[in-house]
Image 1 (cartoon, rainbow, N blue to C red):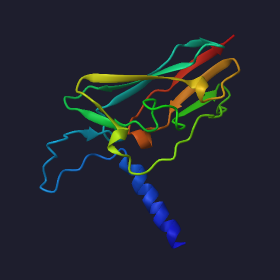
Image 2: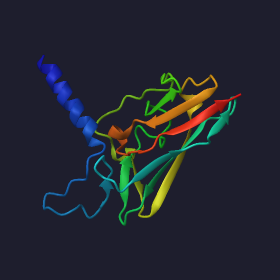
Image 3: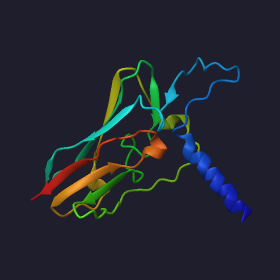
Length: 172
């Protein structure tokens, strides 16, 4: 029973580490070699949004465009895990049809070492943005015509918050 307590505590610490703010050095000042702030759910400086065409023909790629904008005056960063900035290696999107049924995720599921290494972070310069595209058909079982809703659910790992879902209609 004691092992489960330690495992739960380790998992909680690991999950919170990807989006945590950069700590000041021991003397109380920021590390001058890397003055970068990580995005987390309380950091509203990074703005993430999703876009896609309103209609997509069956047989065409279902491309979702994911953009992260840094409107601030300082360089910010976020963890690319559970975001379109890495190959589809986790279920960071929720795709539902108009009946509210979730489409099955069929992509890869990566096992991660925690905390995330430095290489798992992406920095965005002030007033700059980054965009990634992902083909939903490569990971989700979308076959039937109809209206679909996409929600970003990777916020806890990446630190990115998307405030607006996107919808598209899959047509013959």
